[in-house]
Image: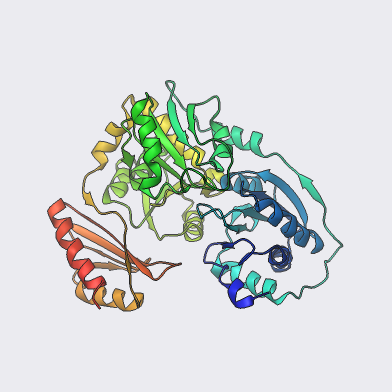
Amino acid sequence: MDQVHMAGIFKAYDIRGIFGQDLTEALALNIGRALVTFLKCRKVVVGQDMRPHSELLFQALSRGLLEQGADVIRLGLCSTPMSYFANGKLGAAAGIMITASHNPAQWNGFKLCREQAIPISGDTGIKDIERLALGGQFPPALSGPGTLTTYDILPEYSAHVARRAALQRPISIAVDFANAMGIMEAKTLNGLIAMDPLYDTFDGSFPHHEANPLKTETLQDLQTKVRAGNYDFGIAFDGDADRVGFVDEKGDIVPMDMITALIAQSILKKEKGAILYDLRSSWSVREVILENGGIPHMCRVGHAFIKQQMRAVKAIFAGELSGHYYFRDNYYTESASMAVLCIANLVSQLKQPLSELVRPLRRYAKSPEINSPVADPPAVLRRLKDQYRPGQVLELDGLSVEFADWWFNVRASNTEPFVRLNLEAKSQALLDQHQAELLEIIRAK
């Protein structure tokens, strides 16, 4: 193995690389053996997405798991939220989802969990698994090879999601599946919501567009469909369906932090408690949580951190600006279908279109996330901290500085030589002014 090349696939939150080049079948076998060695686990659930090489990776990975003595429960084709649910529901000691999420067709990877769908990140095990997998030396299995069984988790997951339904009138939506695992995730909504599909056949080459609703250009086909029809709203899943984007009944994109606020509003109608919101979210998200009797907690970016904080404060729900929506009732993990059902519940109950529900939440002028390539991200953060020291400084994730009438956050990317800027202000003029001055400091040579 080219260990230097392959080491690059072990990321902060998962294992991901180009199949056959960075991520090979031989390495997948070793990753299986390494996971069992690291966790000393005896029961592992494994799901996979629709990419043609996901089956090859399953065969190699499961061989490694079995050889090292773990019993493997094969879920087959499923969404990432379904795999998390199966991990908890079936009492597994570990879980693996074979997917590269929204990455292009030639990519693949593994999302790893402990028991109860607790994520394994770079800080909590991926680096240990990397060392073991690349070293290739494993102790003998404690009690001989494991066994392989199959399990259809869809009926139980569907019943689990359906318990959240509180619809007071029929709801009809347009759905862009992007030829990916949203096709499986949305089966949970059959019989609850009328769905009119786009791109609803599995195709790991992503022939129509990238499966990434965070990129607004990927939503154009969905917007066109919604504007030509009569729908309550439209949704678009990412590649492994742990994220979902929304457009309103007019086909206009709903910012993902506004969806966090609306889901919080929906949940807090039935139960009060802690709600987490991504620190890049609008001020209005915190305000909505408070207005509806919830307890707001700001959180840093990244699913491993969010899930850990949710458990610590026993949060009911968390929303992330990238379209991840986390539910305590799904083992503190994402469920795109639960998020969709929460919005459908709210639209049906309040008897207002989604655009009208969002309108009062647009209280401030807010930027999109702005990426800037920089050579030395820590130096940029130091310059900004010195410049804006009079504000209220928070270093939960990168640098956040808050003033009475505006705020900003700058974070370094985990994967690229970028810093990412988000800011919000009480007027567009104020936003434009501070955005220009911040970018001048960030991009200064």
